[in-house]
Image (cartoon, rainbow, N blue to C red):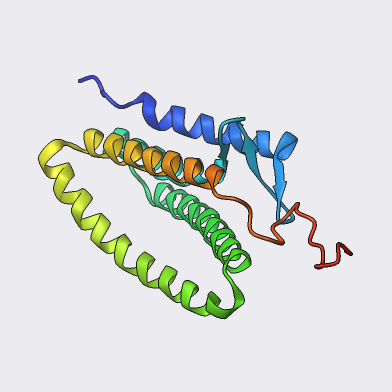
Length: 182
């Protein structure tokens, strides 16, 4: 029986590895960290692709070798999932840092609390909703639809960000006093 999705995990992993190497070679530095690749119309953080690629490859591997899986295979999977968790924590800490840098000091605590509540609600609810949708429409359709929805949201946010003027004192903007002095 032919495996209809056999190239997706391998391709995702290859793209992620190339992306991580590309960041090391010519990545863009933001807030003191080299994590982004500038594609001209958007920027990409390859560690995000890696967080998707590693579980896909593990699922593909275990499906393909389900008859001869040994304890060593589970150990390798556990290590790789820890790597994914490490990248997730790196991305999460980056998002938290960006929010803390961008939010006004008077409401920073409230903004961070809101972030934690939203994340705490969206993860379990999203998992339940996507699971039910995958049972009905199939995993491939739901995954592709979720990716398309995320790209649409990011595109709208990019357009809004481009149209919004930079706040006073934003990175790269020189702040001067009322008399014009620095």
